[in-house]
Length: 106
Picture: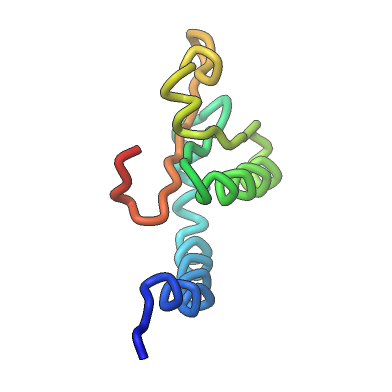
């Protein structure tokens, strides 16, 4: 039987998500400290494709946890219309890039 890459990826999702959750939980205090040190006015989760939906969830979570406005933005939208998404002078955004592989062309 031929094993297809997509099938393998789908069947390994549970382990991948659990590892991601464990990593974030173990780094929680460091992440909060980092954000506090940066003193952002807003957090922007920048992503393309399916990670955009993860960015939406992350934005809601971090906004609730930190009380800082947060949102997800598609990478293509930021590229095409940066003036729409980046704050006016004097504001301090923290941009978090979300990627499945970490090596996409976007």
